[in-house]
Structures are given as C-alpha cells and as structure tokens.
Length: 116
Length: 109
Image (cartoon, rainbow over all chains, first blue to last red; front, top):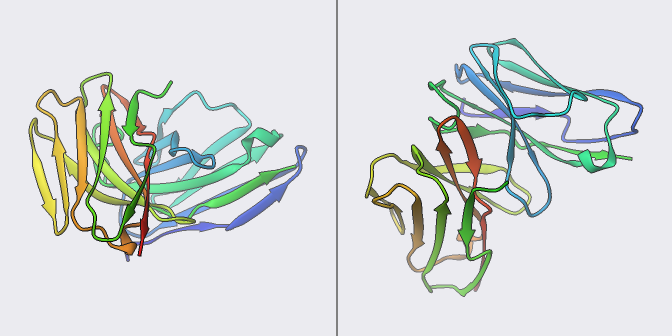
C-alpha cells in the first residue's frame, strides 16, 4: 500500500467554524507533513512530524493546529480561518531522515479548502 | 521568500520536441528532488540527486545536479502528451526545505 489518503476532498467553512482535516498512511512512514498550496504556486511546507513529535513549524499562524495521534494518522485542526487561507492542503509522508526533505515524500490527493 | 527559482515558468511544446527546466538556488543545497504534478493532481516524486555533478536517467528523463550543488535540470527527450503537468524541483539547505517555483509543461499533440 503506497497510498496516502486525505479526507475530506473538499471543505467549505465560515470564518467562525472549527473543522479538521485528516490524513492517513499505512506505509510504515514515521515522518508526516502538512503543506499548503495556492493556485499556480508551489507547495509550502507548514509542519513536519517525526516519530509522532512535531519537529518543524514553519511559523504557521496558531489558527492551524496539527496533531499526530499515532504513526499512521495526521490531523490539521482549523479555527477562525481567514479567506486567504483558502487553498489545497496536502499531506505527505516519508521515511524519517535527520532533516525534512531528506527522503522521497508520498503525497495525498489533498483537501481543497474554501473559507467564506 | 522563495529561494529556489525555476525557469521557464511555462513551456509549450509540440509532441516529440524536447523540454528542459532549470532549477536555481541562491544557496548550496544538500540534495535536490524532482516532483511532477498533473493538472488537478498532487505532487509525485520522480527522483533525488545528492552528489555534486550527479546525472540520473529515467527512460526519456535526464536529471542533473550542478557541480556547486546550487542548480539542477530536468530534460525530457521527445515529449509525449502524458508529460503534461508542472515539474517542481525541491531542495534542502541547512534545515529548510523548499519547493521551486515550478515549470508548467503543455504538450500539443
């Protein structure tokens, strides 16, 4: 199984809502990532978890809160988002390295988020 | 800000023509990875280069990593319509991992 799954595929939320994005992989990878991708732009790294511990937070606003309940699951909790947060949110996983970007990353299909 | 730039931003070719995208970093990279993202899809890993001057081939695709480890290129020979998509390089300097700005390839049949 070389698949990373993400739910939901699409999400529309208001600025006062609380929602969560979910990501799952069963490749035995111990590094998991959240990326944000705006239209016609490259993915931007947000968070990295290594062995279920947060290892990188790329100065992401606190309205985004990641969680890694176990080695297969990664969540991104959303609260009080702004319209400019509308984007494709990609999850990825890899074998852990000493630093991010050291190993091949497997990406999920993403959640397309619209904030009204 | 963006430290890994790619040129060209867009490339339109006739099927059968060759295509090259260049990736340039302002700093020395520990490694470089290449990903392809089809329209409406997600990035898919193509290859990783680690050594200075390294060249790797995958069928019609040739990847190079510069001697100074600040630039890289992806060359596709005899493009096919299945090559359509955006090609991103991605590199790491010290502890920061960046995707390049991407080159969008369109192939006309």
